[in-house]
Length: 144
Length: 144
DNA sequence: GCTCCAATTGATACTCTGTCTCATGTGATC
DNA sequence: GATCACATGAGACAGAGTATCAATTGGAGC
Ligand SMILES: [Zn+2]
Ligand SMILES: [Zn+2]
Ligand SMILES: [Zn+2]
Ligand SMILES: [Zn+2]
Image 1 (cartoon, helix red, strand yellow):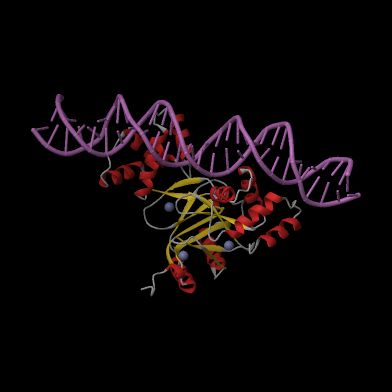
Image 2 (cartoon, each protein chain N blue to C red):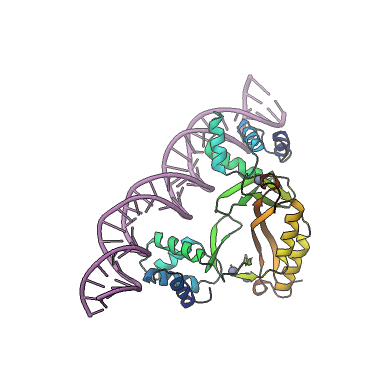
């Protein structure tokens, strides 16, 4: 999800109504930098004096997730969070310092998983891969 | 976690008291086949007429997880679950039909992730990989 | 076996997340 | 502008997980 406008366009194309609350949530998401929880978005809305119901925010996030505008991630501490992202399958490297996430394209993972599945006799239908670490910007100087 | 006895032994070695509730939870876990949630263990305990407090079960699972006897996994539906497993780093292939999980050893993943980290300039400190699919036992006959 | 103390437990209360209901409001279409 | 299905918001609700604290108990030492 690059900008709120893009998200609104996607909503429209998918046949959803372009309501004020949905536009507002799209902007809150676009204003976020890294991963965020539903509770954080609710707090954001409150801070901006937007009177959006809590349920509406949950519903908007569900819708956005269904459209691939955001993706659910599970943080190491068990929290359910979201990251804004493009609607193609990929994974995230999440910085544990600043919270920002980097998209990872395939990089040979599909092949790797196909191989694993074949070895196990498992028909793999979905997977979840999340990397946690420290991003370049947060690395103290020369990373040695 | 191969058997309840093994778990008790590990608890002992780590300096924890071998209390009746902990032994009971160890047996409940050992009796489980695939992944399970805390709520399911509570239900198991109730079904067996064991009077173990809910909080105690949560605490026991925390302890077991800290000792590597069980591992937390996040199911696709967002539930927080556990699987009994060995205390070496590995991943799980979880059958969406029967719920059983297969342990996956490294299979070249460490190398793969090291490479990804290098390309991103990310110092990767931890990761989560979970595969979901259908296990051989649950595959309908010849898999096409 | 018995005593003693700190670790552990269980009941309960509590916070937080996410869902549901339903009366009210409002986009989009005409 | 009128219409109506879709969407919203308030509040109730069900569960997950944690906190508190008095009562219990494992195990060490005798
Ligand atoms: Zn993404
Ligand atoms: Zn960072
Ligand atoms: Zn395992
Ligand atoms: Zn199976």
